[in-house]
Image (tube, rainbow, N blue to C red):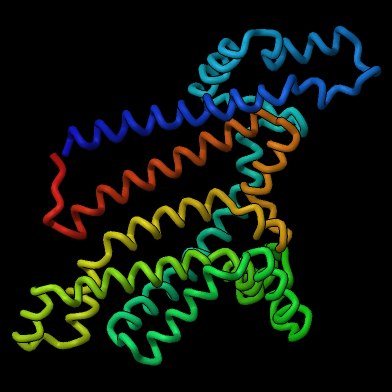
Length: 314
């Protein structure tokens, strides 16, 4: 187990370094950021040189990267070229919106995907199975940008049941604040919920046909206990991996949903940084996303052994 953990930690460090190296190099392929931010014809040579010295743009690309990496290891990720804010401050500003929306969408995925997948497998060929498969087909077929616009048109414009966008004000009542999350959470989570539902269904069908389930039935184990305690627990490993990766993706932010619902999160921030060639913000965001994903995979790998005792790491 110790060897496994050590290997994964080394892999995490190498993954983060590789991701930032790739993004840093690609940002430089777009050209010198000074051409974008310093107005042509109005910039003196002193201003040009001062920018180059401040951001290390006057040095070769490998030296620029190692300077940035050395500062990043001490917690200094540089300042945004466009706004002038520290990159960590930019994350602090935009991360709460993505965390809140990501968690809301993840809850929607779990409360719809898992029960529908279980019911669809247990009641194979019934109305529940038809409902589950229809839910999955629509979730995987509808483009999120179109789905978000249609939900706003129906529930916000026509019925006036829910707000059309934004995060609301901190001083509003809890029920009112929650209403802001419904439409973007459904838009963001339906596709993932459809995938989770199909994954749970296929895993459950495989487990329900196994010998230990037949033996439990022969011993008189109750149907509810058999399904939710024995069968679902043994079918959880593929859905667990999927749901954890989905959660990490939700937190990292999705540009389409954030744009449709005027929800300024990390996805919107990263895209704006790419458009503006704001490499300090780009590399900081990519480092954070990479750490988030590798940590998620690491935690899921450890949870495998607790869910299924047959799994052991050597």
